[in-house]
Amino acid sequence: EVQLVESGGDLVQPGRSLRLSCAASGFTFDDYAMHWVRQAPGKGLEWVSSISWNGGSIGYADSVKGRFTISRDNAKNSLYLQMNSLRAEDTALYYCVNSRGLRAYFDYWGQGTLVSVSS
Amino acid sequence: QSALTQPASVSGSPGQSITISCTGTSSDVGSYNLVSWYQQHPGKAPKLIIYEGIKRPSGVSTRFSGSKSGNTASLTISGLQAEDEADYYCCSYAGSSTFYVFGTGTKVTVL
Image (cartoon, rainbow over all chains, first blue to last red; front, side):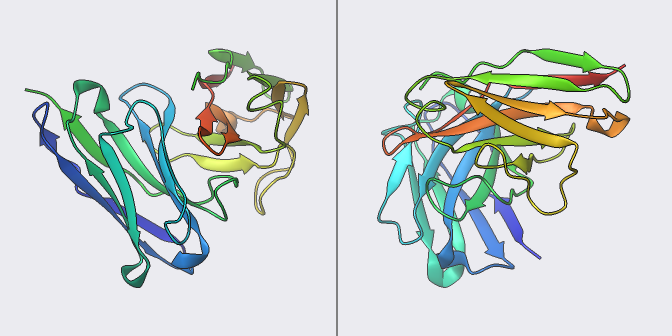
C-alpha cells in the first residue's frame, strides 16, 4: 500500500523558516517524480514544486520561487521542502504527491501537513 | 501561471448527467493531452479520477469521463449519485518551466 506521510507543519511568524518532510513507502521511490501541492483554507489546489526521480529537474511556482527549495533523499525514501521567508499567504495544507514522471498526473496524495504563518 | 477556469458550482439531480468545463490556453490545455481531474471530499485529500484527458484509473467508476476540445477540457459525471457531491479540480501540464497549473475548482451539488 502506497503511503505518503507529511510532517513538519507548524505555526510560524512571517519571515521565519520551516522544513517539511514526506516519508514514502509502498512503492519504488526512485521510480517516481515527487511534488508539493498546497491548499489554503477554504481555497483551491495550487502546485508548489516538483522534482524528478534523481533531482535533475526541478520546478517552482512563481509564488514560491527563490524562497522554497525542494529536495529528495532516495536512500531514505524521503521528500523535503525548505521554506524560507514565509509569508501569510503561504498558510495552507501542504500535500506530498507522487507521479510516474514530471509530465504525468498526480497519482497518490498524502494527508497533508498544515503550515500557518501569522504574527 | 494563471489558474485554469472552471465554473464555481454545478448541480444536478440524482441520475442526471453534468459536465464541468476547464478552460486554459494554448500553452497548457491546448498543447498537451495531459489534463487530469481530481475529486476532493470535505476534509480529505484529492483523488485522481481522470488522467491524460480521457483515461480512468483502475477502480474509478465508469460514470466519470473526460474529453478535450481546443483549450477546454471537460469532465462529465453520468448517473449522478449522492456520493459524487464534492469539489472537482482539473490540472494540466504546462511545459518545462511552468510545470503544472490547476483549475479554480468546481463544487458539485446533488440536489
